[in-house]
Structure formats: structure tokens, C-alpha cells
Image (tube, rainbow, N blue to C red; front, side, top):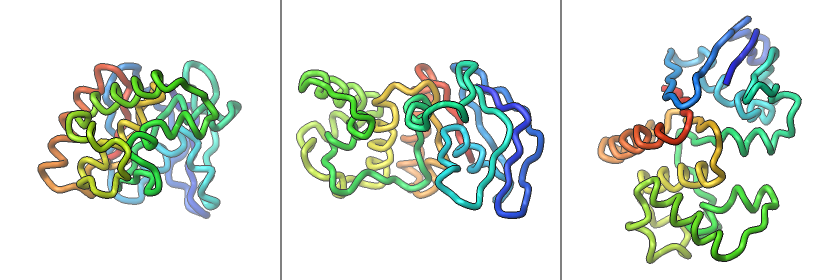
Length: 199
């Protein structure tokens, strides 16, 4: 993952100019800095979510597998670069099972029942949630604790097997025990994914 000559602007304010950054595959990379310095904007730009904010402008190139993401279909980019946000945001009208599979549904990817079951179990196991929810898969996720909801959101993000996992302050809304569990989970996930985290 590489950014070349990136300039990030919010409204009339330029927050980063001519930025060149290389994020190595298979590593855990943290973007650290004070509020308002452009950390989250950079993260959103990696999967083109910045385009959903009318005041944000990004110029330059971001290369993923040597392909310029600004010349790709945004849905393809978001399949390759999954996102986890500050606050847990499972889809409230969907069951735990359907939350994990939401990326497939949104992308129009059809799966057999056996494939769905395997993806759900594998994804929830990867985030340490399977044993806690396997008997409640078809309940909506509102009964889960904040930490469980965030792990569900991580399961949803990794279900599509992205190349990069983007995490925007993923523990900022959690209590210390849940924070510790998510931090331990991130260390496990870095064995499988390139992780970029804002903190």
C-alpha cells in the first residue's frame, strides 16, 4: 500500500501536502498524531470513504497492489480495504449472522447456505466471538456489549478477506476490559492482514 504526493484538504484548510507514505504488507502500522491533523481523513481515503464527505478533497495517488484506487470501482476498493470505526456500528435491523455477511450482500455476491455458515463461523471465531454468540446467531446484535459489538464489526470487515484492515480508533468508545480484548485481537489479526490503525 503506497501513497504518492497525497494532499489532504478539509474545506479551505490543507491538512497534509505532498505526502509520500509506504505501508508494508503484513505489518501493523499506526498513524499517530493530535486531533485535526488528518489521520482519519488519510484512513478514509485509503478505501475512498472520504468521497462521502463533501468538504474533504484528496489529490495524488494511493496504490493498492500497484493499482491506483482512484481509478477503480469504489466497491472493489472497499472489498480490498475493510474498515472498522470508532464506535461499534453493527447494522441494527440485521441479525448477528447477517451482519457478518453484509459485505457479500451489499456486493451482490451469492453464496450457498454452507458457504454462508462457514464464513460466519470462521469470521466470528477469528474475533473470539463464536463461543459467545453461536446460540444467538439470528438475534439482532443490540443485546451484545460494546466490546462484543466492536468484535462483530471486525468480523464483518474481515469476512470479505480484505488485503488491508483499516481501524479508526477502534477502542476509543470501549471500557478498559473490552479495549484489552480488542487490542489482543488486533495482534492476532496482524498474522493474516495488513492493519492500519489511527490512534
